[in-house]
Image (cartoon, rainbow, N blue to C red; front, side, top):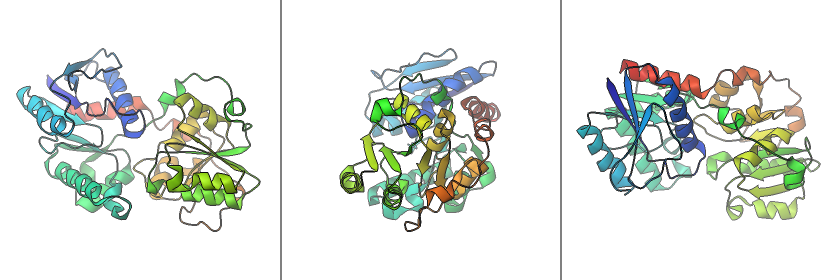
Length: 348
């Protein structure tokens, strides 16, 4: 029986982005691995609680929680002692024994000017290690796979795409509406939500608000108002409302009740928020006209130029017809992604 160990370096982190990808994929792996000649476990430091119970995945507590040292020394030592192949689904790549690695994006390598020198050095080095030493590389989109191939001279045909999905939003139970939560009526506002990062391009949202004074723009996420100028824009423009971080349940309501979900990011490995918005019932998604958005959303989205701050006509953009959301929602599921990964494990 083949033995695989998932490195649980992500277990104590906030449930967003890559961390959500890890938990959701593991939950479906627990079902998908049944009937296969595979022994699967989740390895976490001692004292770290895993908030989920699994049928087929064993949770192993091993070593002290010393961050970098645990992931790069303690975990590889465990894998070697137990003759197990490591699976690394988060952004961290162990320098020793990387085995199976998922590279979500190479943003800092492609756009080094937007990150600190240390961050660029560390993340690029980890990607180089993965490309050189890993038994198998995974990516979350074909675009991401092509970027890895382009910048690290690695055969794209050897990279398996294990995409994001949306079913976690379907499970959320909600009460109320956007008006009761934040005083904005259903169907009267544009909604944007993302984490803080220069590539998320919140500048376009702010410029859109200025150029469309009759429309309401609601912004959520872990944004530093001073960095992005949100607070000053609220002072200048009564059509902007910044609500900070919101719960998953609140995000579902705001996505469901908005006029359109805006996602003007410069660069993404996949770009899951618009997919979540479609799953929640957003009437439209307006996304950047960049390759990965075209790959994931095809003709179910309206597209904007993320670098054009002077001519943001959302009404004109949204006048273009789009395909029903079912076309995209049927394409992606956590179970499908888990089945892809199990197939990789079977063949390795």
